[in-house]
Image 1 (cartoon, one colour):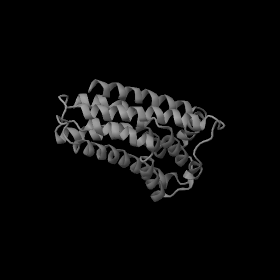
Image 2 (cartoon, rainbow, N blue to C red):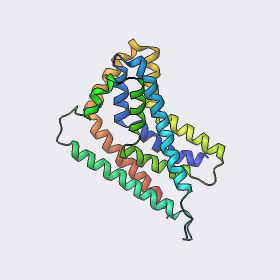
Image 3 (cartoon, rainbow, N blue to C red):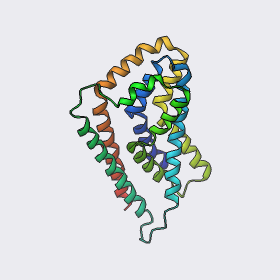
Image 4 (cartoon, rainbow, N blue to C red):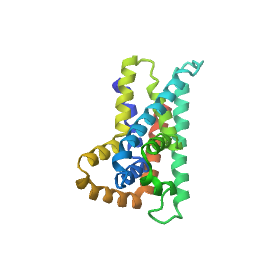
Length: 221
């Protein structure tokens, strides 16, 4: 269990520091709909994280048994493909945003503050279907599909992974609902910082996690 958790935690951290859900969280918390929409957004984000990794874990379990002498060969190949996909995605996104002015983000983010509870829930679920989220979920699912784990251990690892991955959305939401006045200045500072640095952050995260996943996949060949 600890070995699987050790492999999953870097991926959970990569999910946690993804700039788009954090920025969406900040915009919701700075909006008049904060009290209605923040918790549904958190629930949707947490549920989506768990659903994506569970889907890929089930899919990994369903893979046919490899005929090679190395029983983990298929998992290694899959991890290399996922890791390479993350690196390529990071570079492509960087190149697409290279000509845009600092502070320019997805247009839909401008409307996040006007979303109601159900729309916020749906948005959070949908953010888990972005290419980056799917690739990270695929890598996590391959690690979670460890035949040596018991069902109880798999559930425990899934819960820990999901909580860590959702922590950067959950922590500011809970803190803001408890002490909104104290958090407002901090949220504004986070928003301004992310508008200036999210391109570099996204690129570095994608490359570092991608290389980590490729390296681990190569050890299983």
